Image (cartoon, rainbow, N blue to C red; front, side, top):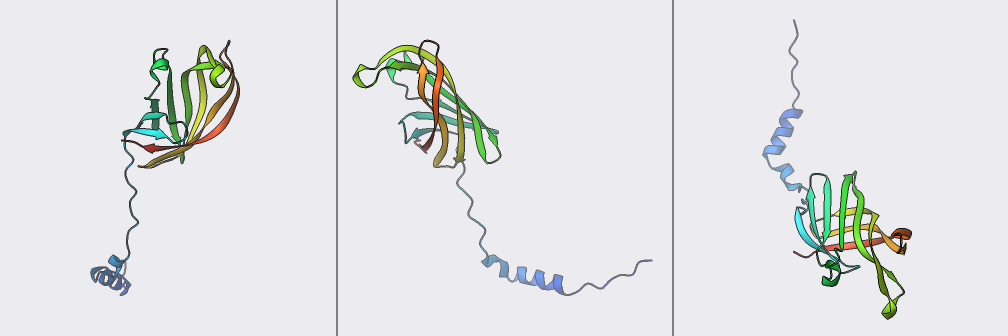
Length: 159
């Protein structure tokens, strides 16, 4: 046979404190604004606008303000990143003009499909921050990337 053990008064004190509203003075942390599932975001670096959507653990972004002259050639940038811990890691696939020269003497010599890496550090209701591989040099004949460098970006919610 088991003996019944007398309960101490600590449980009664805790219940009494709760009932008296003692713990109600402690504020719960403020919940962050919900992250929109779909929206248009503008890059502070390039001025490009992206339609961003999040489905499960994948973030998709597609360039929407493609210049009309480039759109006629099928220009695009499409990014897909999967959540990995606190970051979103993935690639950007693009079809962009390959230019020779610079300034007013620059000319398009080819249209190249390219793949670069993208990492997103933070997604909030107002900002998306991260970094991506910026194209520095490309062989325009073979569309081979010769030089890339990581570049930070910040996107802000447009609508």
